[in-house]
Length: 140
Image (tube, rainbow, N blue to C red; front, side, top):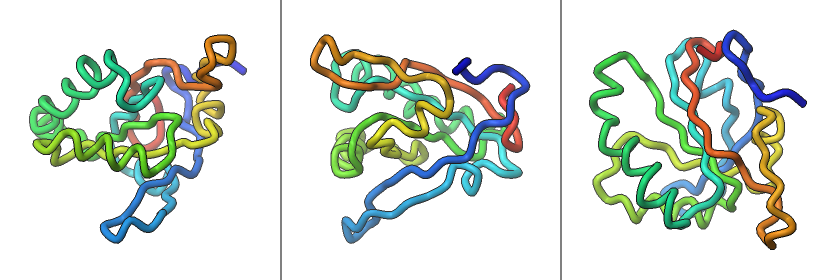
């Protein structure tokens, strides 16, 4: 499958997060992105050194600036379970805008064509590092 490209409509899919009572909730990407300008970014794994120290902090630190430029949602996806994603989100106490969403079985990552097979390294299927901007579901 070819990876998502500029001009494509982002596929719909279901991701998971834990609510305030630590109960799993599902959300569709289209419900978060329809009629909005969103940044969707993916990383190979929660708590990994490069993702935790280089990729996520930039989005957390620049969130206000991005929102001021018209971005409605900033969505982080990783092939992890929602418990791990919530714990990872808590490691950024200054975060007010980045939503940490779990793609536990990599189904959405696969729908984007951005899966990374690290099985031989003992890590299974992960997400490639990516960032995309979509406006009303269309990748820009």
